[in-house]
Image (cartoon, rainbow, N blue to C red; front, top):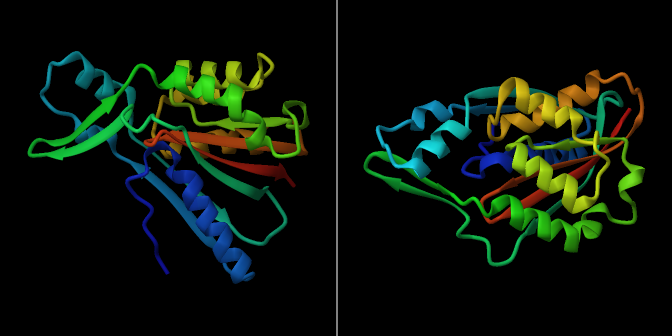
Length: 214
């Protein structure tokens, strides 16, 4: 079988992993390959408006892949959650025009995320607290996004180290980025522990899931 998860932006990896988990739960012998391919450079246009140039410069090309199965190794995925930040649908928009995708990305996004996490972050954590998570895999959408998450949830200063490392080395590769961060979790020296993954996109949508390093 093959399923396409598209037009979701940076949080598409979370939806793809959720779908893969559902398949494995219904078919325990299944092995599901999740591939994220982002060719952002295809959308480059000859447009000298500052806002348009920034949207082109913010995103880079990238690809990632991971295998989801019932094998008790790697990361155990659990408790997927999706939420929409109210009255924020105009902050990230796409329009298909004759010249290609026309993207609007408001500078208000980080602040809106920070304020929402301060008010609603506890709901994302369920019956756990920030201190219960050894790993934080947050989509590396930019330094201001990571700062907003850190401040909004009251995270320790080094909690987003893996996300910041990916941002520094590879930049924002849209949906592929989160899998790069999860790969850093698997490669980290800490062998066990619970974690929280988080990504953002149009809506404004916040997609999360809990995981445990097995």
